[in-house]
Amino acid sequence: MKAVRLYAAGDLRVETVAAPGPPAPRTVTLRIMAAGICGSDLHNFRTGQWITRSPSIPGHELIGRVIAVGEGVDDFVIGDRVVADSRFWCGECPACMKGNCHLCSRLGFVGEVCDGGFAEEVNLPHRLIHALPHTLSDVAAVMVEPVTVALHAVNRLAVPRDCPVLIAGCGPIGGLAALVLSEHGHSDIRVADHNEERLKRVCDVTGAAAVTLDPSSAGAGISHAIEATGSPRALEQLLKAVEPGARISLVGIMHGRLDLDPNLLVEREISLIGCHAFQDELPSAIAFLETCDDRARRLADQEVPLDEVPEAYRRLIAGQATGLKTIVKP
Image 1 (cartoon, rainbow, N blue to C red):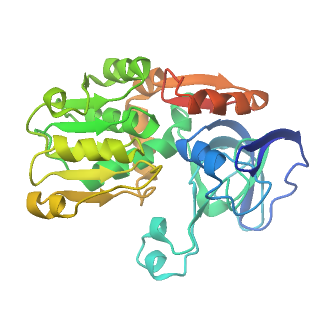
Image 2 (image 1 turned 135 degrees about the horizontal axis):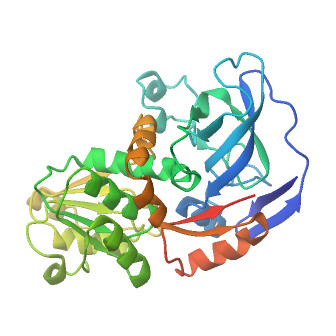
């Protein structure tokens, strides 16, 4: 079968490899229908930070059809359309025992600790698979995993409906967080991004207002914000833009370190809230996307075949996306 494989930082190849073979017990084989390119895929390609096996097939935002089931799998049948949970947790550490699998001490992800969706087929543990409703389009279904991350960030922020929210970054998570807030009835959503085309699309779909992170543009009264750029500079600007007592959800994968005077947080009582992956929001994300399938599809970017994935990485790293999600179609 054809697959995209990551060997090392900067070394991504499209190759012909053996199919995964019959599924082991409690495992299913999927024929990949679509997979999204995530910012973490690009980060790993650029830095090699999470390369734990080489080569590996990336792609943790995937949907597929079940084509084989292993022994002990009795709630999926051949032909079912499903989405994968991206998290690979141990189930035994203290965090997992408390139900916080996203904080597992040995947490890994599909496409890292096991092969992912940038291929024609993949074998995955049965516990990661969730059925998709027939009414949900493939394009919206590919966004289930990033919407789950966005939901987790919004849930952690706990913003009252009548409060303004400032979102730094209109990439997949920031843009989808704006969609979540919009669908939940928030009317004052402010978004900032250097990519003007992507910013305009998010504003058109969600009703958000385009601003910059400069306090004079972002406006007053901001007590809730989401940092979705991964830029320490953007976080520094957010800290200046928000009101005393503000809460900031940190969901972007950071490139670089922050030079921060902690007295700024102490004296202004600003809360920085880490948001890692997601907890138990995946079923809610599926239900959410059923209610706004059309709006989600309007946020999609290009669809590319496996052969064009390396070029898609280059385009995305260069900041040339006009939508939120580039979708790989094997």
